Amino acid sequence: MMKYTFENVIGIIKKHLELIDWEKEKFSCEPFYKTEYDNDIIVKYENKEFVRFGFYISNVFTPDGRRQIRGSITIELFNYSKWYHIGNISVNVDEFLTCGHNNGKSIMLDDELNRVLPISNSDEVTKIKDQFQKESISNLEIKFDTLNKRYIILGDLSLLLIDGGETSGQEDKNTLYLYKYMSLDTYYSMLNNNSFRMNSIVAMNDESESFFLDDGITNIYDGEGKDEKYLKTVENSRILITSFTDQHDSALMWRLYGDSGRGVCLSFIVPKNKVKKIHYVNTRSEGYQKLKRCVDNLKKEGISLYFKDFDNFKYYAKSDGFKYEDEYRLSYRCTEEDLKWAKYGNLLSPYKDFNISNQEIKEIDIKLSWLIIGAKLPNFSVNYPLLVDMTNRKFGISVINISEHDKFRE
Image (cartoon, rainbow, N blue to C red; front, side):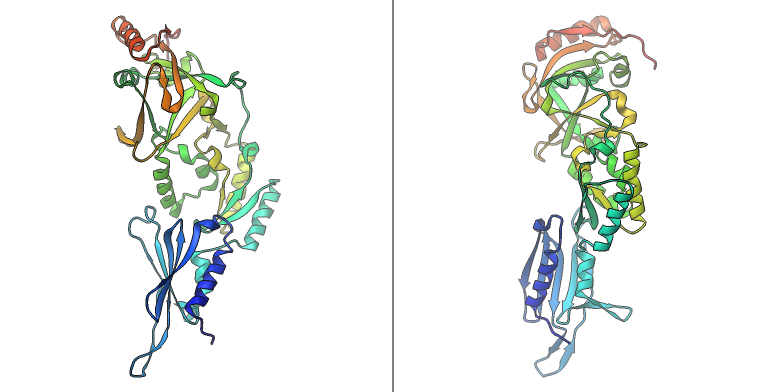
């Protein structure tokens, strides 16, 4: 039986890493020398240890000439919850490329490489292509994600998912006039602190905001995938958003977001390139169902898919059940140092407050324009004149109107 050296095993592992076709540049392989009989080969992902291959000589001789046979086991060590800290997988391999035994059968290095660092399989790729062809879906590229053990599908899916829908009439303008309805308490806090708050996307009313398409089509976060979802939630917590609508003095918006006319509506001047219009996705549409059938049918074959294009609008896609909102969304990636935390009821929310000066919120490049006060503002005879005065003095807003809507269904 052929014996392999430590350098031979390094070469085999490096050759395997060359077969990775998704984010190959993020994987690296480094030797770690210890003793004559025991050395390690460390595979890292983004410079963090991912798999440790311990090379050992199984047949050694003691100083008095006696032969010793040594064996090994493979372990996975996690310092914290699996989702929070990438696990250190330890695979031991001897000079015969044996990594252990299972039911009397030797487990070879190739078997372990394909288990801990899987690569694309041509038969599976053919099945994926056949499934897409069956659904008349074309112009998609297929890669295998070694880290997450699934296929990445590359290509533009917007025509399959997104309905062009109605326009706002502001599409040809570089600057948009958008509106934000809020309660009196929220507006009072803005006045009192001279600031505008943006909360994390993970703290929205709909907890699936960041995972709408993934949960609906690929279901990659089901079962063991929940660990990845926890990690994504932590990553997404630094994405702050604020929502606007292009609906001026709308009875529906007053009822839903303006405390049924007891709050206010602020008008903002927003550069068009600072916001994105929400994509409203019809989950019953032919395109959506085609993608879902592909995923479901391939899952029965043990093949998991992820559509990379979902990343392009994952913060800007919602069910078409919310289409009435005509929502525009501004996002801001915050640093850990700038984040603060609030507790709204039973929900934790990272946030950041942005300073308002002379109607401008310079850090996010938007400007306050005018104010509409709800017609059902409580204690109107006192609160109305005080709000007008405070708004003018604090924010420099001089255009202040009263809403035309004073009747709402509670």
